Image (cartoon, rainbow over all chains, first blue to last red; front, side, top):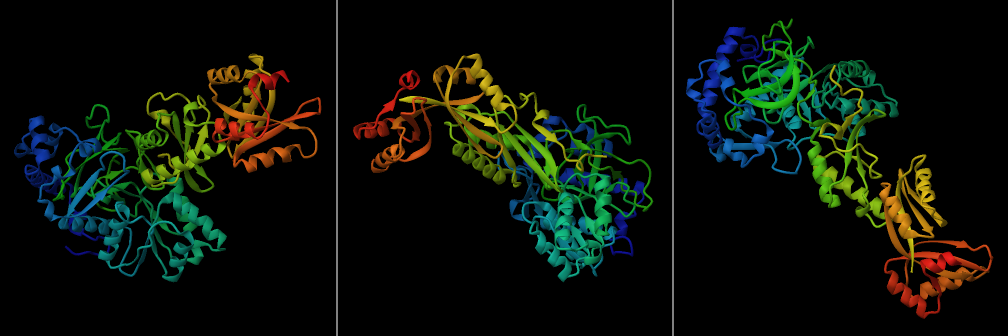
Length: 441
Length: 142
């Protein structure tokens, strides 16, 4: 394999549909074979009366039940491994500290394959070894930082591992080292624009930026265009999840008409979230993935709870890898704020621990100025305090700090009177999303 | 000892109106009221003629209310009245967490309501130093 002028991996990117599906089946069968050495899959196959050796087509996978985050959390994460633990060189984890964490294990080959995929994405949009890539994502357990970092180095670009936050320094780095490509959370890109303004700078003339990757949180086409216009860049959407590898699952090509799922590495199904049957081509449903090129911890028919549709027809770029739409929503109650995945259950547990009693609450997501904010409204019942303002202030500080530690985003905690919030009628009403740019379009 | 009713309220138009409406419906008479705010919420402290009744009515109406024991110290309504009380408080090592005062119409007596951490212990010390304080009943029969 060697890159050509437009493709990092022309062998994979330019496969015909038939060859691609043949490769998928070959890799699927290899993956299923690997899975027979994992204690989890042995039991999983047995309980589903599924014989992995008898899979003769991609469609045969519909005989296997789907799994999701709860399946991953339900016990020791090493039970998914198809290799000895010593062969694992990395773990990543997606969210929170409450309950059992969702862990993904990688072998050296898995890390290599992941970096290759993200390199393919970046190269597709025009990143080359002459570029300077400023990675403004959190490093660490969050996959958005390291995934892009390795890929950019693989391409040969110079990486500035800036991490998140510290806006003035970010701008200084961009100017000092002539950054051409950034990876940035879209809502943060809007905020940073204000900081440019405060410094009397215009990113179009004051920087060398030409490409921005703006995955990690849902955003509208209008927000993309605003970022492109105000920064003078091409902005590309990206899709990934820690359980698959992180970024690199699906990515926009220069046509910007949906994100190509790298089908040589992932089998994608779009299912009705209730019946778990395939939806009609082009209809919206839940994305379900099977890893095709994962050694350490393969995942079969993994429900993402992300709702999207597959674009019909072929892309003008010539790649046959199918394209998915923007993420339209969730089939569960998870939400993303400032690039961080949050489940209302995490907030509920923190409140229960901090207050000692269950309390009615509501999470309001809003855009204030150009920043996204998470407000948590908590009803103060009579038993929570002994009548003093300073106790309330202390309570609010405590809830704020404990929520920050749990969800990694500092919330604005507001104490409200008992009965002032609608009674908890199911999970949906717990979260009110007023962010104008976060809705799917 | 006297009792005061503390009520949690959001800092919004109409909240005081609702609270006083509840007291009106119960025929509660207010001797003194203070409001301390903290941004979007605050605590309303009420000295009323029937604190138990007010507390129960407010709770029933959904307010987050709390009955708190306070010391209602009697002062002379003349220069130095407050100073005398404060000197005793200081000498006795009693720390005041919150306080407010009001005068009676006879212009002879004033009341200083103080909140302290340990009401009964503080009451004993202050009593032994000759300070006079009122119970709920005495407070309202004045």
